[in-house]
Image 1: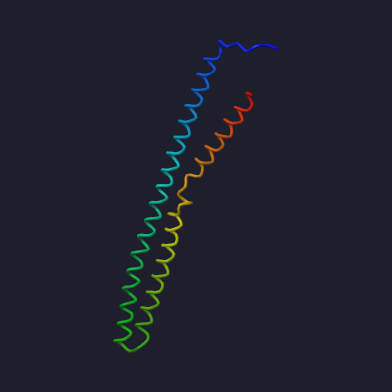
Image 2: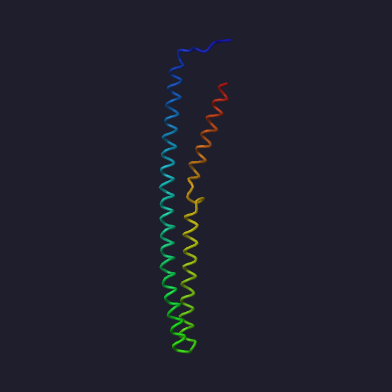
Length: 133
């Protein structure tokens, strides 16, 4: 049975430390990149929600004008036309609101690639530690 050369231990330790620091740096860069991507996604979601709010306000305005026109004219055609337009705008607002909401969900904003990568790194480190024993 041969005994390991203990003179190489400091170099092995430093090499391991360098690899660990490089791993931390790469994970940090991955996390930064993914968080930037998620922030852009959140911005798009907020833009959709803003557009939904504007469309909803316009739809409510048209619906109110439709009701006024319908009562004033006592005929169906001007009021009915305004109700159709208002209903279509509110439908568009609901679609935009749902699209914006889906982009702002906690699951959509979670940095899943970074989490998966860190779990893989931790498993690799555990395997390397077990292989040395």
